[in-house]
Image 1: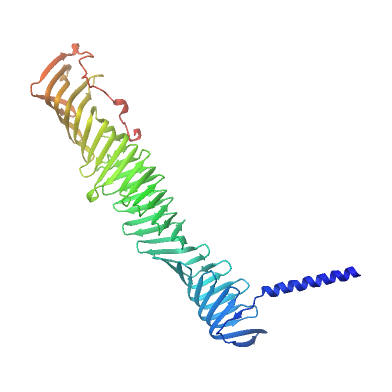
Image 2: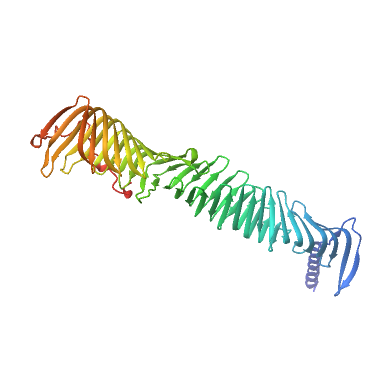
Amino acid sequence: MKTKCLNYLIFCWLISLSWECVSQEKYEVEILPPTAQGVMETINGETIKILVGNVKLRHKLNFIDCDSAVIYPNNNIDAFGHVFIRKKNGAHAYGDMLNYLSLQKLAILRGNVILLDKKSKLYAEDITYDLNNDVGQYLTGGKMINGESEITSQTGTFYTKDDLVLFRQNVRVNHPKYKLESDSLMYNTKLKRSIFKTSTKIVNDSGYIWCNSGWHDEEKNQSSFGRGTYIYNPPSWLLTDSIFYDKKQGKSYIYKTFEYHDTAAKTHLFGDSAYMYNDNKDIIAYNRPVLILESTDNKPTFIRGDILINQTLDKNQKMMKFLRNVRLYNSDFQAVADTMIYKTVDSSIFMKDSAYVWQEESQLSGLKLYIYLNNKKPKRINVYGNSFMAQQEQAIGHFNQVSSDSSHFFFKDGKMDYLYAFGNTKSIYYGKEDGKGYLGLNNSESYSLKMIYDTSKPKEVIFYDNPKAVFYPVKEITESNRFLGSFVWKSAIRPRSKDDL
């Protein structure tokens, strides 16, 4: 019997303790000065308190100012007119009307709502604000101002503790330096950084950017764009899957596949990685990029090397420098070198270091070669230092050859027309008789010569300044007299197609 009484007393004590805890949790709304006591009314059996005129209230850590308010028995509050709600170490909010749910610590603000934190100001017609977690949300359109940025969207969620706002549906960013459109945008109000993971368009004075993912940092003026990024900066445009852009430093870094097109210079560049400068007008591309030069006759020129340096000169003129293992292919001519420079201002190609050029059955080489193009076809080639030309005849192992200090080759419609050779000129020329084949080999020396071609084959040779010549009939042609000392034939390294680069 004593045990049952003791258990009953313990049970009663626990019940009273629990009710005490509940009563402590049920924190009454505190009416602060200078608020008047208000009017008590009973509606549907509930006693409510109505306050009018410079109302100031407190519920736990939440403070509410307004023109008038209704306090319900469950400590919910309806506030009207010049509503101002705030909490210590939290965001502040203004509105025309407030529904405050005390148990959930939820504030529903309507009419000319403004939500402020340390860095930004958010405007909306209605906002639901979770005071416990410092999370606000609007569903009927809103606008945030942060520094120089103005961001609008149909819906948005404001995470004030994390300094983040998630904007959704018809997102627009207005900034003095750019405009942004997206379906979804995460914005860090402290760092002033935008993060987008859906289709996004950014417009500035020089063009626009279209991407599917990326971020932009206003403070550092840096951006990164991911898959399917399209950058239009007339007269050029860039397509890539990954690019980092530093506006302050004036450079970008591409670290995935890209293609760069210049409609003014009619050039197209394809590569895997590159640095870009001067609003993407100057480029250093790595990992054997490919450059394509357009032509009106649908015979483009393809150039490939280990490194490409693309530099913009005056009036949008370009200079493109390829370094190491450079190979060029055009259906009318081909070339290899360790250094090759193309200039759009005069459509010229400069080559040096192990430089060779092939045109039909001819091979040209020298220390330095300058190729001048007309519609991407050879118009003139100047060779300086150890100039050597070899042209394969129909008979296997037979080559017309010219060596000199320098030489100038002239073309007509992309075909060899004539050449001038100067300084220590030596030549081997096979004489022919129509319908009777070869007559023999003419080995000559002179200061200079002019060789005239017919359909890219030697037709006539004119020697200048005390020429010396020896003629060898066919039966006297040997290995020792049919090659000049500097003869070399590099057919094995000649690019045979664009796929051979």
